[in-house]
Length: 259
Image 1 (cartoon, rainbow, N blue to C red):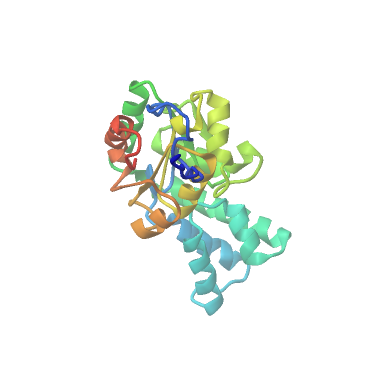
Image 2: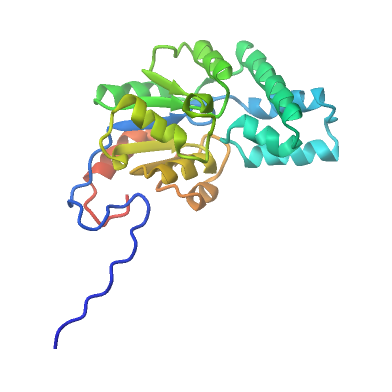
């Protein structure tokens, strides 16, 4: 009797398609989030939001302020203008809140309130020395991203930094920042050669939507391990400093093993 074969289930995101070679391509492009992942800002996002909200008439300590602050925490990693549109509804108010937020955050950065996550710079340099391309991304506006880079002395650390405006305006959880990094650098021939690391569920969703081979959640920022896994993290790391070792084990794992 002829043996019936089972239909092949649809492949899971981030795993090889049926018929692909047993060896998955190695990681050649690493897309890293900034605040919470490579940059420790000590809760400056919440402080800057409170200043911006107060300017728009939201009284600190009020029920309205608490509700909005909870939303800001839940949406860490998302483009800030998108967050303000959701909070205020009106585009004029959203733009005013976003400008006030960027101004407040920039002032806090200029005041020396940020620092690299321990080992972050060394990790970035090690990844580049291994022949990989590293791109730094953020949900902040370009002016804020540049202020962070300047404060840390990171202007020349990587060849490309991206914010939502650089890729058409859509930030996370859309895949645009990750795919923009791939298209602008040409550093990968296959999306499975891209690794994404971030501290929020929005980073994870962005990486999975882009089809990245490795989507690593780090525990130095906004969201905990369960939330990161639920959003699609394929690996949980204590910090970005563990990423080079994680890439090594990922690339040597045989096909079929959970990477």
